Length: 124
Image 1 (cartoon, one colour):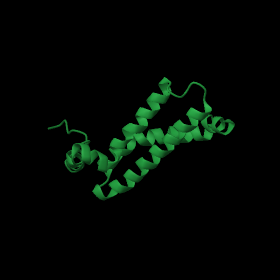
Image 2 (cartoon, one colour):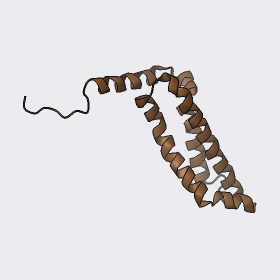
Image 3 (cartoon, rainbow, N blue to C red):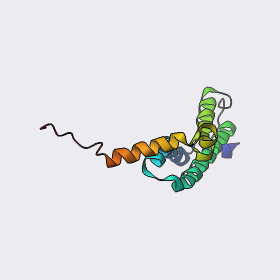
Image 4 (cartoon, rainbow, N blue to C red):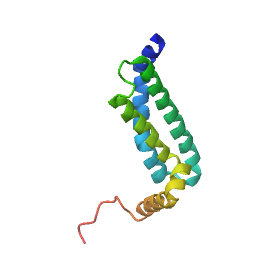
């Protein structure tokens, strides 16, 4: 139990999972806006690896922190980790079809070629 407590309270592990949280929040948007379909497999692998690390953190916290298991933080972290399944393209396509990814990629392509984001010419 002492080993789990050390893992659950390890500053390096906490910092790493905090960075992974930022990655998890931005990765799917980055995938849709800046890559093409073949890159989905790389992002899927990273999403799965991130979920596994978050799951290990949840297990370590369950074993090493008093009152964590079935507490509010447990449920929030479990729900957040489970929601990452929607970032795996095969799961998203199974549930929603490929329409969302296609729309986002088309919108990104059209905005980058239409001059979106360029300053407006106010002279005329």
